[in-house]
Image (cartoon, rainbow, N blue to C red; front, side, top):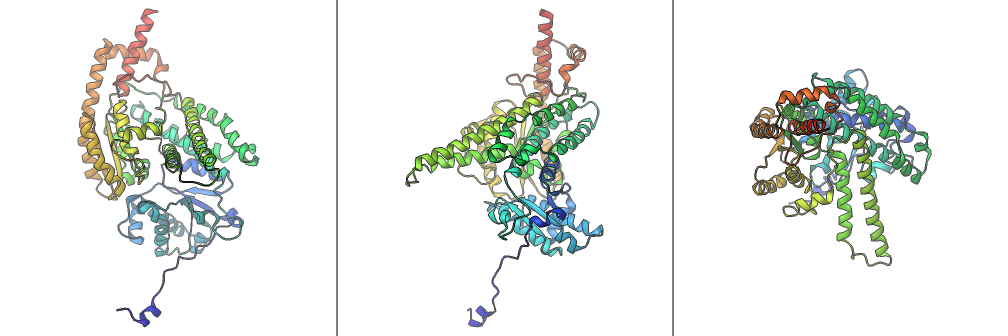
Length: 525
């Protein structure tokens, strides 16, 4: 029974006081961020420096950081939370160990990240960062969110030190577009490099070049108004020219496209599929070590396209609910705006794909994905990856773009668990489909790798069978095909677009068929 004394002595919860990051502090404050792939984080750093911030991407996530989050944070968090929260805690502790005082670390650093009300534990990231930092002795360390109002204006009445304005979003979108393309491209090359580590070495030079590009935006972009900046983005050639130069850098790498490798489509929860390291059991490198080619998503651009699609279709669902005068105009204006944004997104991505030689598969239409998933998942159920994982599994199987799909997701992730249940029905209705879901956590790597190896055995056998059938179709020996390719080294360049033959997945099989076609044409002429 609650007494009057109990009421008087109870302590009500109050949100901790958040010290603002002001424009006057920008010159001596370092903006920290991180949590994506090394390519995305590197180019994001270039964008922020180009906007006038002192910016630094956090090191890649580690098990040591994961253990710090376990020590200082709550129990029962998902894998991405543990790794990203712990990574920040470890970084500031390392700063203190290097000689900086806690007071200076708190006063001269701020962490910027995306925020959300969340339909899962993602909505709790902000409070988990603050809780772990407080327990680690860094109470008052500033966490700034974009995606929520408080994180942007900070309600101070003074000019904020971090502005999520048009310059910021245009810079981030362009950087993520570039990073997505580079990320996809290097994964298509690395399994076929003749010299070990060649792709990684070139990629390091590429990132230095591209980060420098974003650090020095054109003066027109900095001084133009809203319309001028949009037009500058749509008409700029410098970014395309930069990617053309990047493609030439990759073309110096020698490849052996006759290596027979199964193609594994890596999909799943957003963070788990894009991070590279212990956060997903080093899955990218592990698959390559096991002899596979990893097919990765255009993760951030696909996510942007998905969000635009959801808002546009949501507006259509609500059509007619607005009974105020001018409702029809407002509806068509909103739909038109989203349609224009979708077109711009696709156009900008396609421009970069062409600059890189046109070897990568174009971004899949969100309307096609929604259509494929419709019999299994209502797109309005938008938790986690919503219908995307189901639709992509079907799409890549039907279009012969992978031998196997591997879905990685955080341990006990509710939306991913729902998706896995639906995937059981999908696999049942598509004979020959190989789909393997893997839950990730800070431990259990050996068990996860063992499960992948078993499924990969079937995919590997399928790739070898496909290669044997393709070689038989050519009517030529491997030695003949190799000899022709060696005499025409331009067809082995990384940016050379090898046609995709119907029903053929692997690079080696498609390349053999293409070389045979070239040999037939040359003989006829």
